[in-house]
Length: 195
Image (cartoon, rainbow, N blue to C red; front, side):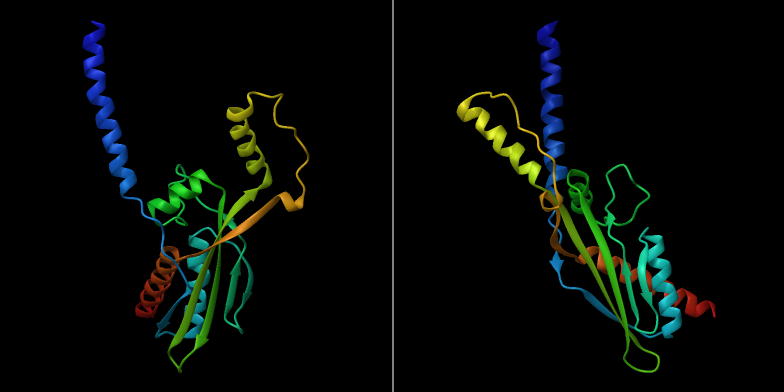
C-alpha cells in the first residue's frame, strides 16, 4: 500500500515542479527606463482633469497639484501584494511577485507642457523604491556564521535608527508609465467625444 501511494505521489510532485518552472519562466524582469512622454491633442483643462482621475483610479494620493505649472506629484504608496487583486499599480507578474516578496513603493510625477494650441505634451515618471533595512544584513551574516562557527546565543538586538532603514531607488517602472499614459489618453478621447 505504501509503495502504491509513493508511486502516485511522485508523478504529481514532478508535474507540480514542472508547472512551477513554467510559470516562473514567464516572469521577466521589468524594463527600467526613463520617464515616458506622449503628445495628446486635447484641451489642457480636459487633460488635467483626466490625469487627476487616472491617478485616483490607481489609488495614489497627490500631495502637490499645480495646474498652472502642469505638475502633479503623488505620495509614495506601497505596491500591491498578491492577494490585492483590486489594485492596479503592479502591471506585470514580475512587479507583483517583487512587491509580494519585498517592501516596494512607487510614486508618480506627471508634467504637462503645451506644444501648440490644441496639443499637450505629458511626461509620466513612476519611480520605484525598495525598503532596505540594516537588520536584514545582520540576520544574513548571523545565518552564514551558524554554519562556520556553530550555534551561538542569537542575534544581539539593538534599536533601529533612521540610518538603518532607507528606501533605495530601483529606477522607473516603464510598464506602469505606459499603462497610465494609455489610460489618460483613453479617458481624454472618451471625454472629448462625449462633448
